[in-house]
Image (cartoon, rainbow, N blue to C red; front, side, top):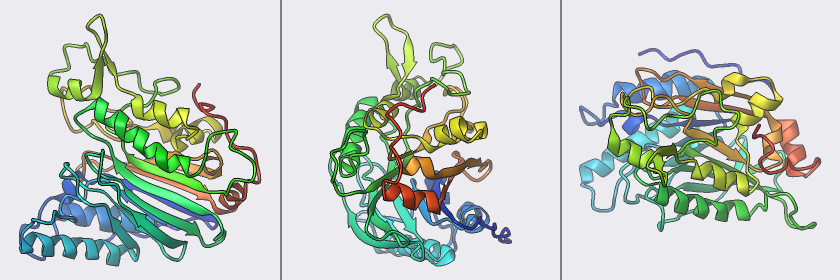
Length: 338
């Protein structure tokens, strides 16, 4: 399988990527031989993008539980080492939770210095991969980063997990009105929310969960809230919590401020019938200064490789540094909701 040509990343750009490769591309069919879908995703999609930070949300075969067999552990280590070696990035895996699709982060060390990794074993069905970074161009300001995978089966659990993520936001005080003199920080949270964005300003109409076309009723119970009169409405709790805390979706920023409506392209739901259609459940959230450094957001088609597309967010390094230094005013909470 040939490797795609490497993109020329514009000078002065810091590139963040979120990839949800369905079940990590599948298991090894032969020990030591990585599956084709894994190679396609990493060699033909991620490698050419030349990312500086990657959130990975289904490391099914790249991480194991403590009671896994020695063969499973060896396979996971081979795969994780292959990912880091191929991309020339340093990797961090979250510990396993109840879910079977753990998450991880890859970091380019020429762009960031790396601080502590924090583990969050409680509350989360799938614990986030939380790594503290510092941009080499502005080493005095920490950047709290995390990749997360919200509970697929429970809006109630997603709400609890979203509130736990606000503990990371709290370290930044990203909301407008933080007290003067507080140490500066940034916060970047990227993940498969398994939840819907607040519909205002979204190009795709809200999912009609009351339609006879919804045949997967278990999925509806996972993704929608039953209203008092018996109808169903999409769960948007993750988005609401993040927006209330002063965090912002970079795709919304690109669409509203940069004239990039394609930034709001759907990322999932194209591979399953009877589940309500396509949706934009793979999203990023950034503090009120960092989001203003966004210069481009795009969705990379993964049809035939995964059931989720890849999200690519480019930041202006100059503007990012200015934001880390608080050189301009923060964006008001909910400012990107039309």
